[in-house]
Length: 406
Length: 144
Image 1 (cartoon, rainbow over the protein chains, first blue to last red):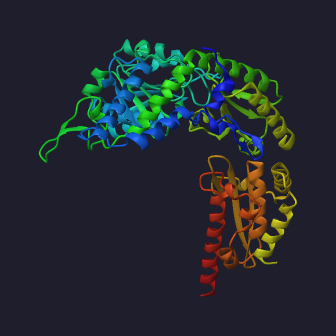
Image 2: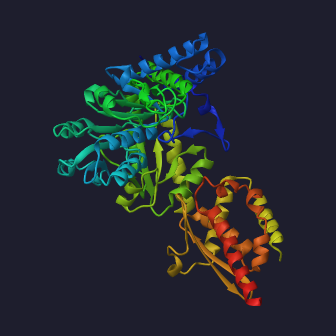
């Protein structure tokens, strides 16, 4: 299918507005993406035609709603190429997914003296849940460092793996540096020692095809809202045999089989991990978003975004005093940068008034900032509805900032 | 001059700008006029850390009035810091405690004092009031 950005932009009405008198150039996609009409229409139709609580309702709407929910699970399964829908757990987002595994896996398999490996470039959401678990269990967090280009130092990873390692938790793509990590290799090295790996895919699923079987990931987490779906829905993929052995994370309705005060038995997969009334409307929105990007074509998205990345990198690098953090050749379309002596907050405030939305600060990535001894960066994260014209405006905006503060 | 009058003055100063960038340019200018905080006070004791920018604030009581000196690592934040210092510095603790800061909203910078912005400014206003309360208590104890 031919990729036509003008046509794509018509699906995202929010992009056509003016901000402070300028056309909006939205470059904060790493934080959240905008939603296409197809997704908002799905949600609207759900509320108007189908809304009822899922599972166990005997009436028409409840059955219909349940069917939609389970169809959404199948859409996600297909999208990730998982073996079975038993491996697809709906959660509130990547954070919810990681907390689920950090808790359940920790309860079952981690004890005093054990180790958990993360990397220096993890989002706080893939550090703190493990830290909390380690504190509870008396285990230790080990950290894979990265080099000046923002690439994981694989030799160091190899040295960290040991008999004490119980699990490895690694991001597929760094939300600040944009680096695409060699997760397949990371997984195969861990598997050689029978260590499972959780992959934080929050910044990966929206940029290209993911195949959990090909990666051989044990757990894979992502968020709906970063992949053009609504907020408050996310996915935890887990290999069935692993999920089967893990204790549930939260207790409540739907995750149970039989409840009595003496003994409660738990429901089967995937429901064992879905306590309470799930966000079934979010699930439908997520399925609709995944259908949408599959329709655009994940290869088209990857190629177009790569061309945007190359265009923006070349253009921005030409600016005197601009430094880009994260220069791996294996990179998605995220550009973190600083302007010589100019505070990112000042730069971001001015860009905002020019209609350009970037993110400033630490991006929930304080260890990365510490690595470079900086307090924050500006981050432009580009996706397939962005244009070269918008990048030109970012370039002009940066020149304006330099004129004001430089 | 009353705190209110100072605020009205600032509001008229900002009325001439109809462009945001001119407003920011003025804040940049103001940031240069801020009495410089001696670098030896730029320590963790005086810092108000936001996720976005940092503010340092020091308060001294002289002849019953509080003098604030402050700084920030971001220039626009520093410009707003200078306005806050200008409005609240040189008054008795009681006046500072009673002051209603309406100028920030009127000059269109309210977003900068929102709790979610995390640039240190909202915390700075709170801290200025806390200093005022502390000095007020100290003065009352001395009189007692």
